[in-house]
Length: 553
Ligand code: F6P
Image (tube, rainbow, N blue to C red):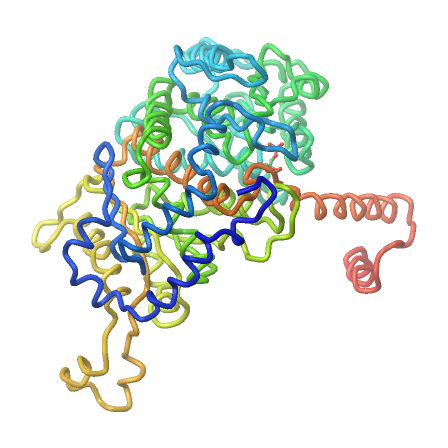
């Protein structure tokens, strides 16, 4: 395939389109009878078990998807990413988040320079700083040790670290290590979020970490200035040196802001914001809370999936299988959404992280060469932990729209509870739902079944479930820091990259967020001119003018 050709023009794509008709004739109710098919549609790596037998796919579909992967040069594209080629061509950047978790002795080049020693240089600095901080040797302006951390950042500088924090805080080992400490996040510029982030915190014992790749993001910078003011007004201007640190690729702006560059932790333009949780963006605040050794385990988990992704055959490669199936669902079966359903409260912030990772990466309108796509890329991701989701939006998933679901379950609970007299433990109760829901979606319930249950005639249509609704199940052995890195981070990061590689788009830029930002800047200027200088609202269409006038009045 020529580099500027679109994947949809290939024979392999057309072959899959033609194959859709065959699949439309099948029902999962029948496909699931084929034991050999079900066995074949599984994959396992380091105890992570993927079962994709409830996808609307057959062995033939998979063969065709593997051929599509060949046509899209998936193997070469994965290699180019690991090799440090500038695959983010619109920003002329390598895409090397895998280097953030690579072992010390690995060589990964960007611009001909091995970046691994630099990565470890920052990790060593974080390790040392977090040890000093956690031991109480790092004292604040009034001589007290700091025990509270507020991490100020948005988007990728927030969502990844938040999900890992939410997961780690339920892990007994991590929780023990975090005893007596608080880690909070401030993302929204809403003053309500600012107030919440520092509610009941004593500035004397609080460290503010400003996390921003660019150090220009309007919300983060305003929030950082607000918290700086909170520190300065309570403890005096010199307190900033002890109470504010930063993570950024732009160390010049960090210094200009007033944070000592010695207290700044670098990362690099080859780390995309939404792929940055393994850089200082996540590693620093999480190490302050849980200690570096726990965070290092998380990084090792991610590194093990990197190895699996790079070296396993596509038939056994979990991120590749997941990526191919998502392309099948979106582009061929034309299901526009995907539900992320972890049966684990520890993963409550997983879906919001995946929303950014997936939708900012793959929600694109043109190919990597700038050619308008005649098909839609990306999908709408949303989700909630089970069983909460079941009592919220599952009605639509069962009888309304068809939404392919990712069911994520954990064998060993972090909190084993067994209430005497109950027939199962809390975890078994949770997991009963994890096992039941995929079959409910796949098999449905027929009018014949309802008749045999003597359901009144007028209720038959209401109680019928069409079934044939695809899902996949991922079962993890447990939810230690290692598995959080593996399952929750690296598998999804690579799956999303696979989708982008197949669609032939650039999954690593995000020009779509720029227009709104620049219009907000015009509004900001106008609000200032009206409030401070009493100027009328000018330069907007009539609708925005009336809205602004009403707001100002
Ligand atoms: O608005 C989108 C975005 O650019 C994301 O890609 C990024 O994660 C977020 O803003 C925050 O950016 P920064 O880390 O530069 O403050």
